[in-house]
Amino acid sequence: MDKIKFAIPKGSLEKATAEFFSKSGFKIGGTERTYRPSINDPQIEMKVLRPQEIPVFVNEGLQDLGITGEDWVKENRADVEILQNLEYGKIKLVIAVPKSVSEKSTVGEFMESIWSQGKNFRISTEYLNIASDYLKSTLQYKKRFGKAEPMIVTPWWRKGDNARAKIFLSFGATEAKPPEDSDCIMDVTETGTTIEANNLRIIETVMKSAAVLIANKKSLEDPEKREKIYDIVALLKGVVDGSKRIHIFVNVKKANLQKLLTELPALKNPTISPLADEAWVSVNTVIEKDCLIELLPKIRKLAQGLVVYEPRQVLALDEIERRKEGQCKKDSP
Figure 1: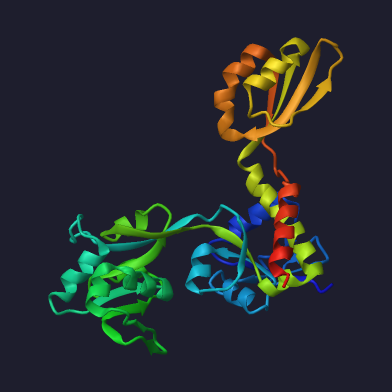
Figure 2 (figure 1 turned 30 degrees about the horizontal axis):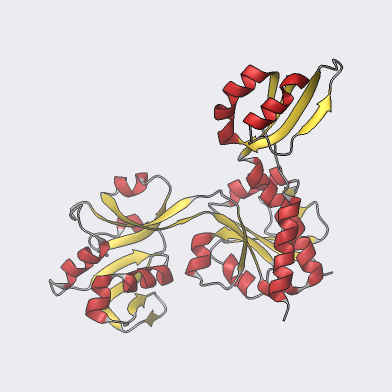
C-alpha cells in the first residue's frame, strides 16, 4: 500500500493539533523545523500546509487526509468526506458593522439602507464564496437583484456582474476596513474582543466552525487505504470521546449491586470484579462527564471508595467498524 498522505495545519490550529495528536498515540516531531514532520507510523507521510489550502489538496487527491477548519471546507466548496469533528479550534464566522449602525438592523436591512442612498454595498473578508452565498440568500438582495452574482474583487481578478454588492478580498487587519474601505466585515472570532476594540459590533453569526478530519473520496474507495484511514479515525475520535467521559471505579456490597445498576442506568455494561472480601465487588465503567454530579448522591448511598479517572482516549471500535462498512456500501455500485 502507498503511504497515507496526511496534511496537518500551520498557523492558528498548529499548537492545538500538536496537543491533540500527543493524546492520540501518534508522535509527531520536527514541526518547528520542517514542513515534512516525522511520525511514529511508517504508513503515514505527514505534511504541514495552511488550513486554507488543505481542503483543495485533499479534494484534488494530492493528500489523502487533512485537518482543517469546517469554514475552509465550505469556503473552498471542497467535495471531501468529513470523517470526524475534532472539536478544537472552535470559532464563529460573523458579520460585524460599525457601532453607529442601529442595533435592531439585520444584515439585509443594513444593505438596503445603503442601496436606498444610491451607494454600493461593500464587505471585506477572506471568505469570498461564503460571503457571496450569504448576500444572495437575503430577502433584500433577492428582491433587488434576483440571481445576479455579487462582484468579488481581488488584486488579480474580478468576478460577478453585480457591482452594487462588492466583496473585497482581505489579507488581514480586516477589522480596520470599516467604515472608509468597507461597510462591514465577515471575519472569524473566538471571543469578539478584537471586533469590539475596533468599534465594531457583531450583527450576525454566519456559521460555527471547528477543526475537522477530512478525506479524499477516491482514497476511501481504495480497500487498503480505507482500512488504514479508519484506524486513524479510531485513534483521533478516541481523543474526542475521551475528553467528554470519565472512567469510574467504585466498590459496592453484593447486596447493593443490583440496586446500584438499576438506579444508575448511565452505568452501561460495567465490568464487575470480585474483591478480597467476598461480600464486596468492584464496578468500573465509562460514563459521560456531565452525568457524575447527578449520579454522585446515589453512588454515595449505595457504595464506597469512588475513584475517577479522565481517560486520554475512549476507542469506540464497534462504531468505527460500522462507519467503515457503511462507506464500503456507499462505494459499491
